[in-house]
Length: 246
Ligand SMILES: [Zn+2]
Ligand SMILES: [Zn+2]
Image (tube, rainbow, N blue to C red; front, top):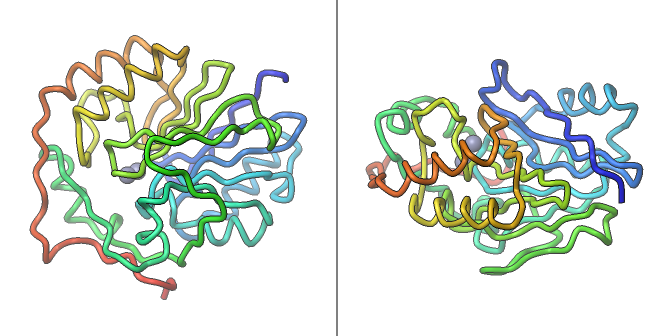
């Protein structure tokens, strides 16, 4: 299989929020779906590589936070492609449980006070679920790589790890700007997963925020994370991910 072209989809400017497209002759793999109302951004990004929404073969939702899953139902409806997610994120994607954010520091607590992370989004029904510690071979979809459970940011976070050395990791890894990710369930677990991806040949990390970064920077970040102690926001301020966008 040829090496893929990785296309960043700018969901918000200045790399504040990214989704990605893995493009090969076999079609397109979408990694994350962005905020609600991001469909035009996908169409424009696909147009740059002479593809359309109908070329999408699979949509991997790395986790249920609104900036990654908010546009998933619309992308699924427009492309007809199946949605892959982790079983632990199912209740959040369906809007059956409130999404939780575990802040790692002042940046996380600041983000948590903004309306952005509390947006509702259209309920998403995963077509393919990955179990705890599980993986999905992407070759049947035409892509050399796997989707692997890489928890730590949320319990059921996923990463897409390609034979080309590209790792599309959602929020597993921060933006490379040195402030750490705003939300982590388990920073030590994140560090372990980053080390695992590098040991498995990951050379370029494509991020939901900022990036991309190379393996050395990813490893430095993993070292920093081992010293992070997460703090949970007050329960009454938990985001409600409700079925059906208003
Ligand atoms: Zn997140
Ligand atoms: Zn995010």
